[in-house]
Image (cartoon, helix red, strand yellow):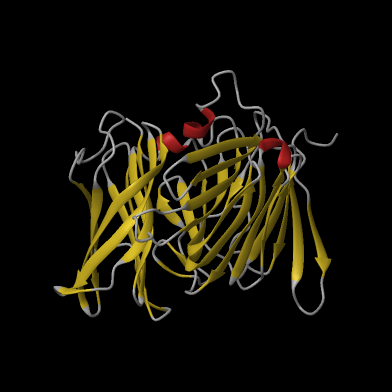
Length: 369
């Protein structure tokens, strides 16, 4: 008898030496499924699903965003979309939004901020999700939503497409990478540990690049260029069992692109990741030498659901040239749940006390207690 959870893989020869692998994730997982979770990187399949198959307590998600440089009036558009394949107890903070139960394990979350700060938000439930793995990239179609994404084998370019006129949104997000991919503690090489904390993995295909959003929202143009980003998170158990709070963000200051991450486990152990490029070459990619703390209003550390939105975050990173002292201060709160907030705003800083060009950033705060 075929297993209840259909999870198909097939290899097909493409032009040249590149192979394509197809993976189908059905809309509902079943209790008792055995999952194989990948924690050590291989020679390829960088962005492929890391849980095979998804079960009741595992999750994968593919996240894409773009954020605009603030204009002379301080206005800033942004767009973010996340493609989830999560069992009902996997990424439990998302599933908690459905008190009567999630309609599907395959969900799409879309958030955007208009230049004036007005917000739009969608959650779309898919049928099956069909992934195609080509080299190091992943592409996917989430049936019934009009939503898909496509990557090229070397991870240099991703595009997201939305064709959901019944929901009031049609268009695309295009991201062209300017810097190399990486894992939490090192570059995108075989043999890297992909753990962020026990139970959660992370890989960053596009840490920084040119992002172009071009959408029609209820017939109105929503279009901008800015800094783009794409990463992939996954876990082998409910997210809240692995993380009590987390700070993550990405930004650019002149010739420096930066990604920061700090996660506190439920037992209070802090795990960090620092990534810095200069002129598109990695100068830091490791799990040390970084400190991230909130400042201003609501800057209690560690954060709780009652803490509120901090004014901004200070990020200190030791690099070969010295000390980076950075500050991300929000203009808009793109997502404002008590357990999760996503911010966009200005990015400023110094290197060894000397000012760097002002930039732009997008960042988030998880606070699950």
